Image (cartoon, rainbow, N blue to C red; front, side):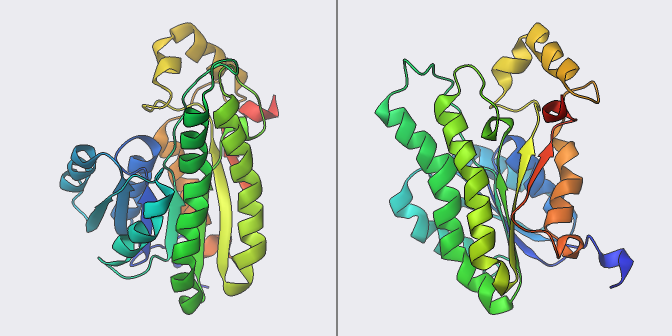
Length: 252
């Protein structure tokens, strides 16, 4: 293989959920700047349109509430309209209610599971046929430090992200033989809307930075290299894996 094209995603069709903000938005922008045709999916239309207008490369958007499981089939159809079926699916959308175990409601539990765990699977299920026809595909789910560690007020989020880790392995077992590789990224602490409360508390943020081997918290750009690796020919023999991009947080 031409080494210059090892991490090439040019002309690939990439669907990124959660593209209106945070890590999803950063990933969507990175893929667009790398020459891919990107379809950004999110619930908040103004933020999604703002991302589209700020991105100079070719991108399209689909406004959808991914926590509404009944609408995922229609969402998948809409995702395929601009450029055809995606080659790559990045499941970055997520929610963290930060409720103590004593306060978790059935409604919030279901919303968390639907968005964090059910949506990545059922959206992939709808899109995987297009990848099968090409004989090539990449699915990258977003796991978490809480896939393996318990944090305060994180029982529903942690349960969903633990499920994402095992779901990723099961996706790999089911679809890798068709050339569709499934992996997950587990980010460390990075400033986003989802982690705003952490970074508003400077003492807490410093504590998490000190917990890493590197000695700092992450930034969204720290995920760009790992994502390109998992979504290109560089990872042709990698599937069913969880890559912790956490500065060594889980190593200590």
